[in-house]
Length: 443
Ligand SMILES: Cc1cc2nc3c(=O)[nH]c(=O)nc-3n(C[C@H](O)[C@H](O)[C@H](O)COP(=O)(O)OP(=O)(O)OC[C@H]3O[C@@H](n4cnc5c(N)ncnc54)[C@H](O)[C@@H]3O)c2cc1C
Image (cartoon, rainbow, N blue to C red; front, top):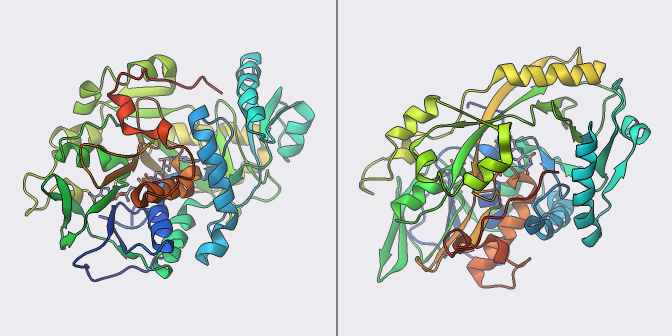
């Protein structure tokens, strides 16, 4: 399998003829939704075109944080941390969750001022986030020789293992009764009298009246096939993991030039926090106006260019016929080429700050394609236009940490249960009802 090596997942082999709910996509959002639906006694089937967790959910940094989030995501992120606390026991497996704290390391007065502004949100939500000075930052970064101005620090923030979490949650969902199929692309949805009547997969038809689309970077294309305009683009972020290193920081942190996170295997996941690459594709032009506010706010943080993805997407269309294989079967696992140069540069910067990383061996480098919405906040929403369809997508580079709560919310919406948080900020209609695009200030 390309990309990081995931824990093994048991899956189901037989396509059921019918189900109460079908989930499209086996990333952290899909398997978490399956877990909560199955625990509530709902007959749920999850279809994944490739392998469980094969795309973003195994390729991410593994940060589980409330700190720095958009104000609209904070309540969901707080609920997520509560779920993560009991998740290993709940699913009977190891997700690698540890409350080891996160540091946003401040190098300039502007960093400190931006973080002071976010601190007000933290206080309003009763979080333990605080600004710390040079000495406390140094104490939380054992082995660092670099002295920093300080950091925004949240001791209760956490880390988890992207290569373990999805297999563990999926196993828990299966134990609770969910059926999970891999190598099972969903080509489209069949409707009768305006309502969902079935999903058509490459392995056959499943009769259902409810679908959750948790397709990550593919949700836009899937929606296009349903004549739904989901403004979503993709950016590439690259990551490396090192061999085990002893004596370094236990949690996660980031400066302007590198981000690190201690791994359960003793190594570090290292990335260049500041660089994301957006390949020019037809959607870049189709959604030009939607993403204009984000483009202005991001400045140099997103670099534009041409890549293999530009070429692939030029010819990518939703299924012409549900009888024949389409894009979802052609690309089983999105495995973009990593930007090795900038990732190794991040490691060099990290090793300069923390010389104990100098002896670390680079075990693997990979990249992931992140699905982003115009306001970098996900869509977790039912759709008036397609009764029975719930969308949970567009996590914009920070869906791993809130994944379990997002899955809970999606399950609540499907079941008509009291939602875990107010779903209003995540409604799909905000992109078409004249609501101004709100971009969170930098933290
Ligand atoms: C490099 C990188 C670093 C990141 N760092 C962090 C971090 O530190 N913390 C954090 O919170 N978030 C982080 N993120 C973001 C996080 O990984 C994602 O937001 C999250 O994993 C999204 O989960 P998902 O289930 O929506 O999507 P995915 O994990 O991408 O899963 C979607 C799945 O749907 C499947 N699928 C799509 N279409 C179909 C179809 N038609 N039929 C069947 N299956 C289909 C795909 O094959 C895929 O497996 C990072 C992401 C990347 C790439």
